[in-house]
Image (cartoon, rainbow over all chains, first blue to last red; front, side, top):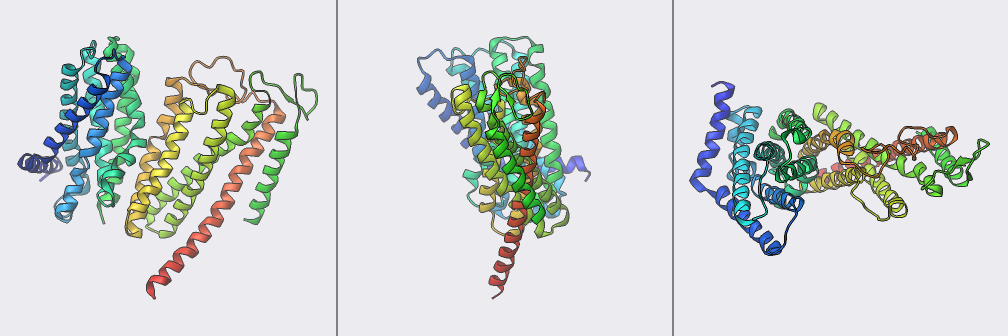
Length: 223
Length: 236
């Protein structure tokens, strides 16, 4: 098998095991619903500014991904299949397979949050759809990139759940600040060119994070 | 190392005496007078301590990063000892910089914490140090701990350009050298400091860096002994 097909094999293996149990999907969707409902209770009657709405939007995505995305490596460790995976595939193949799976999961979650937001908040109107979609796309991939390498690190540690969000937070801050700002642009109906600087930051962040994780993954993965 | 120790003591003593005792006047005539900077006045003296501390905490992070990188390349456990010693000192200097900066901010900008970009970045640096030690304590064996904490330090270091170069310029804030800073009333950013002030400032940078190197050396030696003892303990 060449590099590309073996990466796809890892992805399809994860998708299939996910579809069989639906563990992550169900739990994460319920997590999204819970957090949107909590925010609704707090802000029911208020006229909220776009800054607050976009901030809350990404806070939900942050905590949802931080509660579920570590499973990708933790489950391998729990089932004792890490060794097998180490035998059958090279580290970078495993990394990219897991990254693609996490990207898909995060994109789905962001979409779910968007839909819920559109229903729940009348003041959440996306005026520049192009900025919004690109922000969601780049932001989700950025979240997935950081979440994947952190999951690989955390799978070896004790107190996995608590440490995972804490570990990812300092690294995710540049991303969080930028996507929040870009989402405010989208809600305020700015022109596409206004958000161009934010997209440049997002793309450079993505490239740095994925390249760095790719280079360092060998050291995390191999015993 | 003894030479470095005495040199750092000499530099810091000089900074304390010269930085605090030199009078500030409107029109400095001699070498022993600093100009008054409007809006800062005597509070400007903090620059001789606050900036070197912040600089040393970044320097310590770079040391921890470099030794972590060396550990991954060589798997020599001594590098992990060096890396963690540098990180511990960096955390101390980072705390000192945050405290001195926040006291300065209270009297100059009105509140202890303003989320200005540089304050955000020192907060992140503090968080990275904290998380680094939290991660280390959650990892079981020595080898795994050394390997994964080195990886984490390098990953955290990768995001540094965003805080140092990009964020202060797009967000805008209170420190000199940020977006929209045209006044130039604070001379540090453009290094328009008068020569005598710059000498004291530079002595502060040197003094604190050398203090760090000396403390690092002491800590590394102590950690080595501790490691040897724990190895002997486990053999018994």
